Length: 322
Image (cartoon, rainbow, N blue to C red; front, side, top):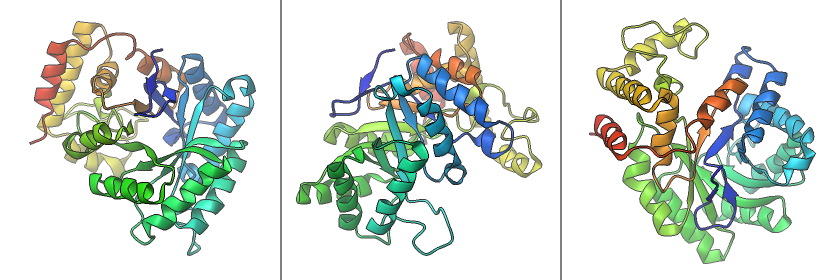
């Protein structure tokens, strides 16, 4: 495993980050033991970057991760664990947002579920327009000083919001943003490439990307004009209408290009899709969201080889944002 530094910061993380949202667990298609095996498999393959959030399955995913970490006490100190705050986690007025009240309360709940005394990267899950940035960033910086978190990050923020947060933090000499987390794939290139990549280079920020396979669409299992495979995310009737909408001719062309490239390189379409993301120097890590141990093994096959320039150019061309 070739580890990467998190932007200009010294911590090193694996280029594949294990996402522990476990959507199959939410949907009743998986169980806790399988989720723990997924985590163990990822760590055994050298993945040291693990992403979670207090919102995932009403905190249950943090609990599962905590149980897995407890069973790997000898490895915990070599893992970079993340979680997030902002999302609505209850019906009370302060059960959402980035206020000092909510942040300070939720870090304690997260640490209890994870059975840890600190987490390594604490991310603001979204921008909170109802809370002053100095209140939010002051609270996050205080958590760094208290030793409950090591680094601060931000998810789903625009470039303007990121720059403002950096300015506010610098003005007060608080702990700076270290990492961003945004959606990025062959089907969703715009926000990262047009604005955020430049800010990462300018300010030395790490970049984690989620949904690298666009909820499975880039796995090669889905094609235009065909029914989604049974037991897939897109199989239920409630999702099929949306599936027909997103599976455009352009999307199918991208998938076809991935499939052909995979055959040429003796790789799966998913492995090629991950390799394309990681071929961008601004990207620190791509987040995978496996429901089974074998999914982890497949995505790890995207590492240890270089994406040929000609294949990169083909994928760039077919997926260019107009």
